[in-house]
Image 1 (tube, rainbow, N blue to C red):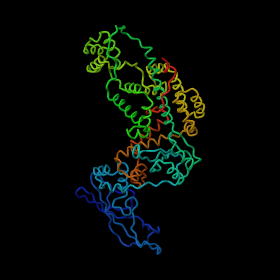
Image 2 (image 1 turned 60 degrees about the vertical axis):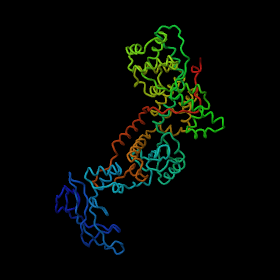
Image 3 (image 1 turned 60 degrees about the horizontal axis):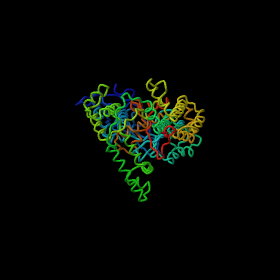
Image 4 (image 1 turned 90 degrees about the horizontal axis):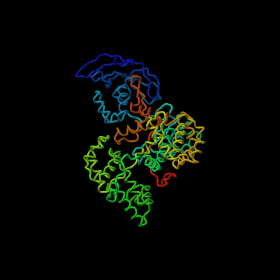
Length: 575
């Protein structure tokens, strides 16, 4: 019961003060010399070793093991005597059993130093954080790279230092971790570990130089999930550039139910003194003051702690347009759908209407906000600082999500609103058709039609879609392989998420060696040791990322701003 399958004989068991002391004697065959591997024939002496064993219930277990010391009969061997080791129980220079060492190693791999020590105290295991960390050894890297190799970067410190994680895509486990993300380091690793036939990566082309230098025959495969993400970014940018089309269409279809009131003289409209408007005005003045002193864009960006694209936008755009953009960026509240009714009632009553009465009227129409918001809006109307009522149009990100999703997953209302957007602007219509055609290529892996899609997009597509098509042409072989072969970087992205979890658990205080050990653990214990398994969080992240990349699910991309002015179609520029 205590030592199943281990060559020991239990002679006595004592229970004192919650500690179980087991007296045992080794009954194994004579051992071999650890230096020359010759089997021993003569016994030199015996002595007793004290080993910590895994707890039994709530009791701590101590094994007092009597072992034999043997002579080494080979005269050329440097070892005169040696001590036998019981397989599955003892090891050289260890004061704990092999099974307990396997437990502690697994706990340290999953939790690190201090959290693992706290858990060991709860489990009645004697182990401090230093001892636990000493049990972690860097896993051995195989001499040859896996046949299907996945590569991606991860951040040691976001925006500053990055590393590279290499994953065996077929086995779903980490192979090695590199200290940086340079192509030179990765090329050196590929040179030392040949054998990669397929290399999966995301859309970043930073590692392409290393592939061409160290593994020119390897086939690059671009990830399908990242392709859909880049496509959604191009569609969202197109929708953002043509919001005027949607607004004009909505204004043309809007029918006002309230009769036209008599004219009323209101104060001249002024911009509200909000924080974002004041910040925009001050930033415009600071940038143009430095431009008059012949400062460069880079120098202004460093002085004002801004991005260079932001400085160029303030340099090339009028102040009125910047202020209007800042005004439109104010979030819509619950009062927004009722502003048209409030403005009409305010004008009809010549301003002689109470906020309480209007609050009760719109509350009967479905308003669920506060009375104070209504009073603030009426005060803004009297002061002339109220915002104009904007048409209810969907946001670019929402339109992008409708376009990128399969049509059979949209509700009836979403399909109707997408149809209105589709009829409002020809450029959005063209972007929608191209996006759905490309998503069909990705989901059904029709890579042989990619070149034809690129040609169509380069002919009459909006500018963001043309840029996406040009990017695909530059990486044509890898993208075609990604739309043809079943391999993807889903497993790699799952391990990157696991790396983030480990880094947060260690609070950024771990060295590269410890992080590398925990990222790619290699547990090689005895048969009685519990096998090491990836944590549930890591398994879930790997499954979600793999399913996302294989099924082509849309994840909203982050909108990026460019320094080039947005293009507009004929409907946007028409009066």
